[in-house]
Length: 204
Image (cartoon, rainbow, N blue to C red; front, side, top):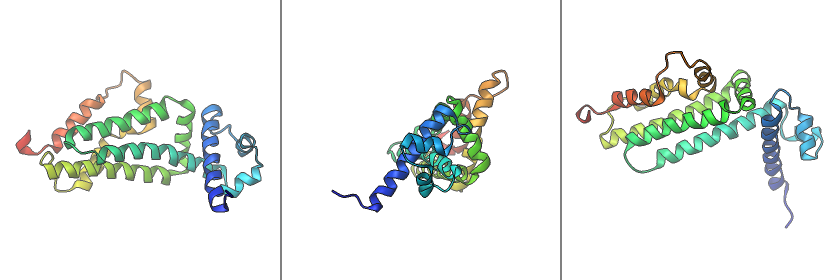
C-alpha cells in the first residue's frame, strides 16, 4: 500500500518529537541541536525544518506530549465512576507523583520544563487549564452526589489547583526537596484540608 503525504507527514512529525525527547533526556535541551535530531533520524536539518520552523517549536511539541500524558491520566480518573472524595485525592496525588517522577527526578527534563515556562508559557497555561477542568469535573460530581458543597465549581477548582501548586509545579517541588528543613505541609495534609473545606456541612 502506498502512503500518501497526508499519512507520511504526521508520522514524520511524531518521529521527530520522539527522537527529540530522547535526545533532550540524554543530552539536555540546551545541548541538543536540530542537527543532532536530524542526524539521529538520518535526515537533513532542512527536512526537520519542513515540519518544525525552529528548535523552540520542537521543544513545545515535546512539552505538549509530556504534559498531555498527565492530562490523559487526569481525564481517566475524572471519568471513573464512584465517590468523588477518594477520586479527587487520587487525582491530586497522581498529578503530583507524575510531575515529580518525570520533571523533577530527571534533571534534564526539569531543565526543559524550566525553559518551557520561560519561552513557551502558553503551553504551560493550556496544561494548567486542562488540569483545572479535570479537578472541576470531580468537584461537580461531588456536588451532585452530596459529598461536596460549593456554589461556584470553577472557582473551587481554581482555588484547589492554586493550593496544590507547591505539589504540581516542578520548580516548587524541587525547591521543597532541596530544603527539607523548611516548613512544608505534606501533600496528604494539604488534601485533607481542602477536602474538609469542600465537604457538605451535613457530612462533616
